[in-house]
Amino acid sequence: MPFAAGSVDSATLLAEIGLVVLGLALLARLAARVGLSPIPLYLLGGLVFGAGGLVPLGLSEEFIEVGAEIGVVLLLFMLGLEYTAAELAGSLRAGLRSGVEDLLLNFTPGLVAALLLGWPPVAAVLLGGVTYISSSGVVAKVLGDLGRLGNRETPAVLTILVLEDLVMALYLPIVAVLLVGGGWASGALSLTLALVTVVVALVIAVRYGGAVSRALFSESDEVLLLTTFGMVLLVSGLAQRLQVSAAVGAFLVGLALSGPVAERARDLLGPLRDLFAATFFVFFGLQVNPRDLPPVLAVAALLASASAITKVVTGWRAAARAGVGVPGRVRAGTVLIARGEFSIVIAGLGVAAGVDPRLGTLAAAYVLLLGVFGPIAARTAEPLAALAGRRGSGRRGGG
Image (cartoon, rainbow, N blue to C red; front, top):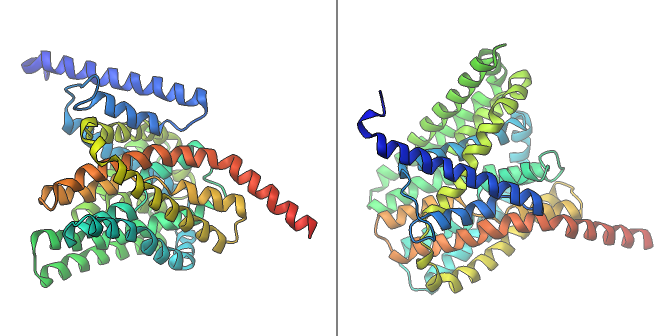
């Protein structure tokens, strides 16, 4: 009997996990009833059940953390299934300018804010990373919830997300060297390894995607589910081990699959994605102690306001370059607002290294604000986009 040694603790753990999952179901039902994405409610639910919340639960942190990681990986894998490698290559070439603008516009607010607060330069670089990168997990979930995966502006949004993740593949090794005080040789080696890994993965996805799809194909749903799921987790783990984002690895696996394998993988892994994605958003909320938030809320709100505007500008300009009309530009800008998993990872590196104790709390408040506001802004952008489109048509007709 595998649970005999600790039957009471195991029973309690199972009951608490069941309670959380049922709570997620109720939140999702409430979100559907009021017409919102469930993400903000998942985040707030994590606050309620986490340390310092109204009803703190003694959940296994390791179990929930692994579930959250799987959630992000599956979100990006499913997003990769929506596009071919050729489409991605074209988007990256066309979107390089937008990617540079994204970096300049959204890294700067965090960098400047930290310097104005008197933080050390390394902490400023970390906060710049926190404000720079959108949450791939949140954006992927919102695009799916709102049925926008086939929209004309979505490739421009995807290009921004992919370029950000590729920048992270370079940024994280550099930050690691800064935090530990490593030499240039160590930093150059980490950076080179990350670059080589990304390039090799892209080449495999572009040139050998068809062969990979044929190798994974099976008439049995069970075999295909286990094979695909195992491949996604394996590649993501290897990518992270090589200092590349697990999200990038999962996205590239999705990109490499095509044809019947991709179509059936969407159906088979969709329910798993929804379950583990909800776990990720709850896990983030569990990590935040509500009592630590009030002292930093004012600064976090100012920083969130500034960087929300810069993200809207980023998405607007990227969609405009792709020839998308005003409604699509509004949607592209607002869907990029949310920050999430990467921002927390970056702040966590600084906290673990003892860079500045204020970094973790400020980053948590900042991400929570935009994690809640971002999906709401994306949802409310629909009527604003429609209104902007009607006005634009009216002016053209009147001219």
